[in-house]
Length: 126
Image 1 (cartoon, rainbow, N blue to C red):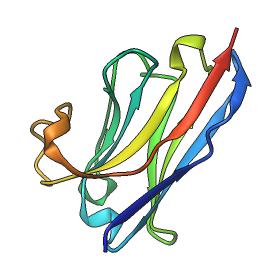
Image 2 (cartoon, rainbow, N blue to C red):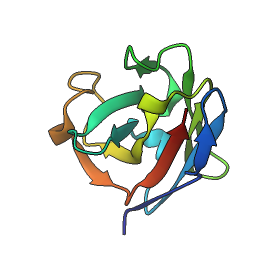
Image 3 (cartoon, helix red, strand yellow):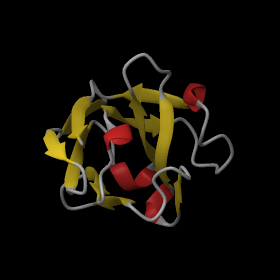
């Protein structure tokens, strides 16, 4: 049974750092492409970062490039999102998701992801 469980969300101040975790079970994390998405209050869910099959490549939304880093850990079968220089506009519920295909196409399309976690809330105060 595939399961994704996020953790690490918190209330922080602008400029702080935070690391989110996504524990995967029921499959081997590195055999799939994975991503982080987020949904701010009153807004649609948006793409944040993607890591390719076997952790070979990474892509980021322009809004987080240079501040966020996505990574995977085979030993713990866990996906991470290291967030530095947090801004109030980063406030959102953050979700990890498993992509249906290892192909690079469509990483910024929600319908290309088949399993999602329940989300973890990040709140950044100014």
